Image 1 (cartoon, rainbow, N blue to C red):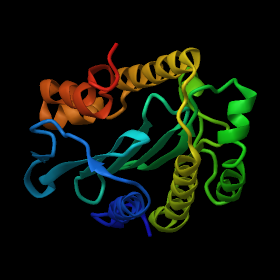
Image 2: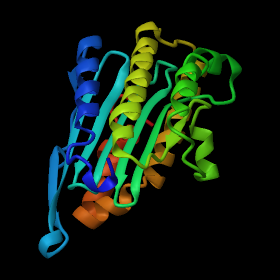
Image 3: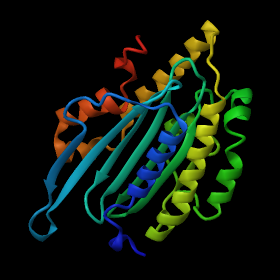
Image 4: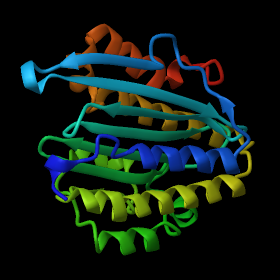
Amino acid sequence: MSIGTTSQTLYQPFLDHAIAQIQARLDLQPYPIPEGFESKSARVGKGKREDEVLTTSYGYQSSKLRQIRASHVQGGNTLQVLNFVIFPHLNYDLPFFGADLVTLPGGHLIALDMQPLFRDDPDYQARYTQPVLPIFEFYRQHLPWGGDFPEEASAFFSPAFLWTRPTQTDVVETQVFEAFKAYLKLYLDFVDQAVPVTDPETLAEIKAAQMRYVGYRAEKDPARGMFTRFYGSEWTEEYIHGFLFDLARSPTAPL
């Protein structure tokens, strides 16, 4: 199946699976989505190429996870995006779960990872990266490395970072979907096993690491240009800072 025949709901099964899994395994509560961000649409293109772009947001939280959120963009055959990210509470040393699933006119861009708080800590890597490596090694046989990405970003990814650019949509629907399910299952296993951190020094380090991560992601968000084009700069900046990467504003994480 080629890019041109991409399903208009390519990433809906990913989102449905993720929501079903977190509902089954976590003590979920709604996470507040600021007014105006639950759903947003725009008309793009002209004439026969005119289409609607719809962005839908989802938010949840649990006793161990501060924010579980998704941004799902549906814009026809050549624009499909799902950004699904999990942020732990600041008294857990869990990594972040990050899935960026993007289909643009030029092809598919897929990024899956459990992004570490402390990339250079061998004990941390033994707990949270080593268990992921067998999954990574299995799927990278079918999903070759996607090529260069900014060097400054490397500090925020683990050695199990699955980054690929499939040329066939059926690969996204099969291999990418299976990898997504495997990464998410293992992450939820980590959540099951997680215990609160009480050491003040470690808590400060966790908070600093989370702030570095969300600060970088908010500043470098690759969707900024797309959202600005569709919905304007004011909406976009508030969406990025007020929902997608809102740690600095969170009442549970005062500066």
